[in-house]
Length: 292
Image (cartoon, rainbow, N blue to C red; front, top):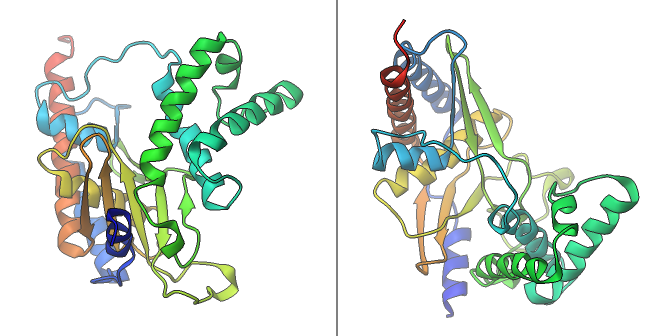
């Protein structure tokens, strides 16, 4: 079997466990209790948005988890994911044979639609349209590279149904005295259903899914909790959908993938990691706040 076939089989294997509603409720209560304690020192009106990058920074650099960010300015790295996901989606549905063939038509169509209607499908259309041809080529090449690493990671013919590629981020706001918002971003949602089966009413509401996350670099300490965090956020977002049964992380730069089968223990570890991260962020803010 090819590496892509092995990875696909690992991703789509039957779920090892399933998290029930009572376990989800207990997990939510546990997280609320721990986060409420962690955020008690934050001034009124303060808030913390927890993301996977923040979890990683707080673990590696607990002395400066927020890190000062530069003023936003468009650059290729901010385009490659959204354009790359559109490219992979177009390839998965058979519109194109591969990312190299798809990237120019998709980018061109997006700019044309913006020029015609003012609608920004990806938000970067005005910036991209104003670039000289050489700079556009750099943006497109970066998106092709990103899309190719995701496209070649799997054997797409082995999926029972076309996975959901991209889509809205998962959000959950913790009802604590201070606002704590969890945000999870996954590149793919793959229904874990037997080949040839048909979802009832063409909906996957009762079908467990596996999430796929793409990251740069290589797996760092705490990678398992980080992957489980994505399942935690998705599971808390909607009680009408099953908690994701599996999360696979891809690190294309290193040619590495890792998988977490989601159970109560994995979710509890992720929830504890969230609470610790909130505590680190609050502590850093309090220590750097001006006196008075």
